[in-house]
Length: 385
Image 1 (tube, rainbow, N blue to C red):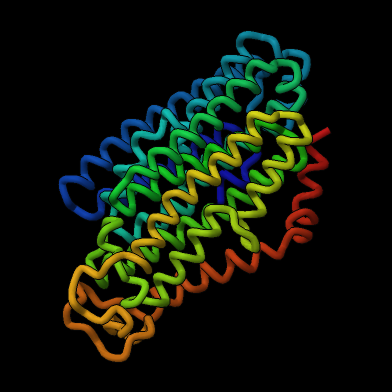
Image 2 (image 1 turned 45 degrees about the vertical axis):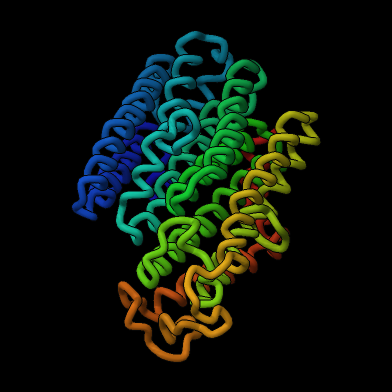
């Protein structure tokens, strides 16, 4: 909340660090060796990112004598080609990209998401990197402004390159993963690349798409990690192969995974489609054809790992002789007929209801095109020419 409402760059740094410190502790909450190492790695790289951002803030203060974002946007005008200003932008974007896990600065995220407690992963995947990606958009568009990107096209091209490489590399790495949480972690690397590219294009359509995709990704990925937590607790399923025929044993949660997965691909009607559509339209209207192609390729890569997951859920050969058409009744809350003593942990009806609500919201927001445009029109009109 603090990052979104502050009007001061130093306060933004403080709020980012408060978020980071809380997250480092949450990742280590599993009290296992793997989670401790993942938290330490996250701490080191997260602190590095924060330090780089703070260096950029310092350069901005040297150039203007203020840290108020409104004053900065006014006083930076006319100094865009200054080396101090360029250095300020570079340090801030790199620092925030590290916190948002944009490739190749993503290396903390797969381990942090994989080894954190399952419920923690669902929480931080929806919020933490989302906050950093939001900060990238806010710093780029409201502090340095579109005029800076037009005056210093190399800076814009560098951020676009950051985003496009992250889209492709994250998607490709997600395709080859066997662990569910690690697959979704690399998927986030790809999805945040889309958001960064949308902000860097700096057209009304692309920025609208970036904001919509930022919101949508939080809902979709938070829901997917929460659903994965339910399936892990109920069946001990943590790899793609473990998901074999779970569509028949836990039909409700598996259905949520399917809905959120195809939404992540960008199938309408879903908020995942809206975000990608606007970014692609923005790229086409700006004649940034490579970006439009990359958005299309990202959809294919996402389809590759989501289809693989759905194939295991519904079409894989059963590992045991159990009748796949009869629910194993892992919990009454998920449509089964009787309790299953084989389930490693009980799953509450509330947990299942939470992931169902996430899927419903993701689909419902797919019909909210006019609402998003009306809500964001004042912002877009204020920061874009």
